[in-house]
Length: 381
Image (cartoon, rainbow, N blue to C red; front, side):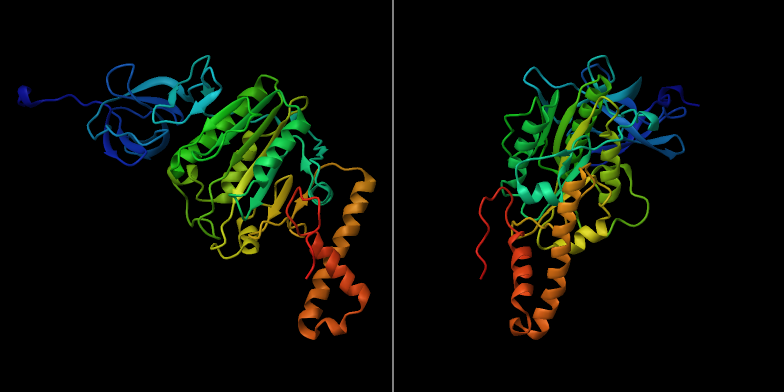
């Protein structure tokens, strides 16, 4: 053996991708979740071991896209779980390529501890936000997972809804995940600044959920607002997605379930979340997206159509309400169902075959499809 040409084996990167790297370990890889340092000094990049690949190889993910990580770079097992760096003195968490760090007393754990079933909060009180129809058909559930399925995500409905909800809740900690072009809300104690790319946005959403779970663990009630990645299509990705695909929301149902698991409320400490799910007109229509994504397990689902109008017939809520409120909703939903039947009759036979009472039912149902926080009912043509 030629000693001069011998180089001892070492833990090193063997393949790079946009925001991940494949690492070859000399011995068995560390556990999933471990912080892995790339380079030779304390100032170098940290990633998180995301998946074991076999043959002592593993996938390591980063919080952004590193520019200078290359095959052959050495890696080091820090022996500690990966975590997010804490918010700065202004309350901002800025998601960059170096946002991951070995867990410490001040960091925000990348993994949250799921509360025991016996500790979960049983009640979901309804929260009124000052819009009559919203508060009747799909009131927001305090301490619950609430979705705004938004056909016009560029409009101001979601920001106004978050502001009204925050004022009604009076939570100890308020967190907002904000995109690069969005204006940070005045009400938020903590702002998670999301990059424009899909990976960075998913990581920012994760960081916000981790921050909320961390506050819950310290006994603080939380209001959390964030935006989900836009669905890529109506069907979930076939097969088992990689950690990278899961992070960017390959399966919307899986993503919402994972987020909801981190935002669970416990007795005495609630996390009220309001998640915006943007749905664009070109994705086969709003109804098709809602039906196929399987997102009906949320405590409340508020649907805004591509015309910017609230859709009470597709909005739901499991928030706790008293008997008169439930009865009021039941009566109005009965009108919606009857109006849908009459619309079919109208399409076939025309208005001449509808009596004045039936036309009035249609008019009332159509008047309920209007922009939220609108004091006037749109005129009927």
